[in-house]
Image 1 (cartoon, rainbow, N blue to C red):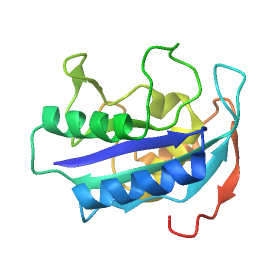
Image 2: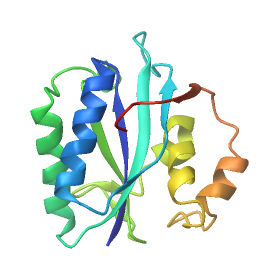
Image 3: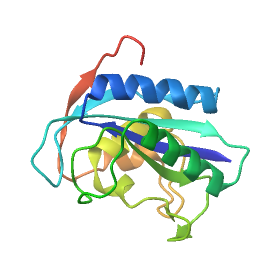
Image 4: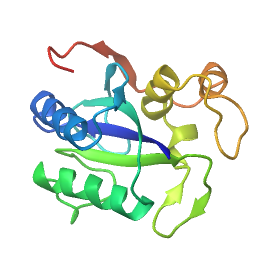
Length: 162
């Protein structure tokens, strides 16, 4: 199953992103990554984020992929007790699971954030431009070209090992 995820960090962001990419590569060796973007914090006052997207083919079931992402976040010191919009050591959000539409259990897919935030859609359009959104029917390239939501991306950044 082709899976796409969003990756973000605004606490020790370069170290956490590099480490997360290594952990994701170890788990799914064929994974591909978008460029890394620096983005303003959205929904709260805080340090800027590094955001990117990744795509990989998963052989395991959805629940196992979600558990693996949760484990990687926890290994990077992710705290889940705070508010939804807050600083993060690492945020790994599964964006889509093939063409599946799942409503709430074990996840809501495709995630609504794809259509709502530039820091999610732009990196996804970078790595999956011709992939169609499971409910919208448009490609991610088309969705990005038509995006009119708030602008939070400051620009692309270069990480030596990203």
